[in-house]
Structure formats: C-alpha cells, structure tokens
Image (cartoon, rainbow, N blue to C red; front, side, top):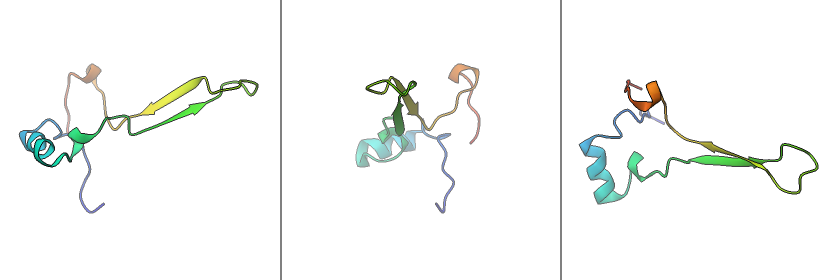
Amino acid sequence: CPEPVSLAEADSTWQLLRYLTLRQGPLASNLAEAGGFVRTQPGYAAPDLQFHFVPGYFRNHGFDQFDG
C-alpha cells in the first residue's frame, strides 16, 4: 500500500462526504472485517466459539483518541 492506512481520521467531514457520495472509505466498512469459527473440543459436531476481528483500537474504553 503506497499510503499509510489509519482509522484516525474516520470521523472527519471529508470521510462522511466520501461515504455519502461514493459509498467508499472507512465509513463503508461493517467493522467486522474478518472472523472465524472453531471447535473447542474435538468431539463437538459444530463450532462453538466465534471470533470477530475489527480494524480498531481502544484506549480508555474508546473515549480517548490518538494518532495512528
């Protein structure tokens, strides 16, 4: 990727306009970018644990913002 990738500016007016006009950018994401299911015991017929991977960061429960 030739440019840095960050969610630091996702709440900017530019990103809102980009989403409203082009349906692109970080606001177009559902935030659950990847996931998976696993069995915690070999004998289980189906997976019983689900993972969600999100492109986000949390500090002070999301109340503080920082660059990057």
